[in-house]
Length: 197
Image (tube, rainbow, N blue to C red; front, side, top):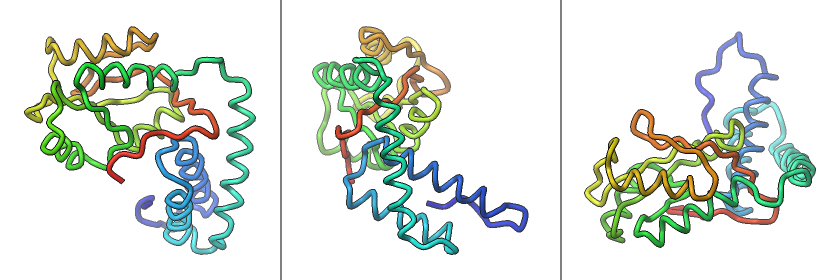
């Protein structure tokens, strides 16, 4: 994690808030197993908060776990995350490989090369998941098997948008990506896909 260059005007409190959000979003995203999550949090503390003991990260994780449990108790029986997973399953059945928390576009290209999906690939980064945790919108890249991005009017784009709609999620194409109105409300104790980690 790198928050950018340190400046005298940026307070320690502001940096701590950024790292706290990083801890929260990584926990709720569910893209990392326990060991990898601990490693990421410790790295963030070493890089961004050298004035705090690294052990503070475990305290924050425990506090964020409690907060997550409290929030999840008020969620509906079927969450947006459940709807997303159902839509992703439909896409997989239709020949679109879905990469949740894909590391970067190179990893997506490697899947196109090695797995040769029938229709294409849909992928999004961990940062996209964090945005869905915080802001309720997931941005999804969709590529044809050639590696070309979908465009308005493409059958593949229509297939993807229709899959989200079938599961009650509004989605539209904007600036090269599919924007899905969805909160990443993954329940505590469940795990998301760990793709190319």
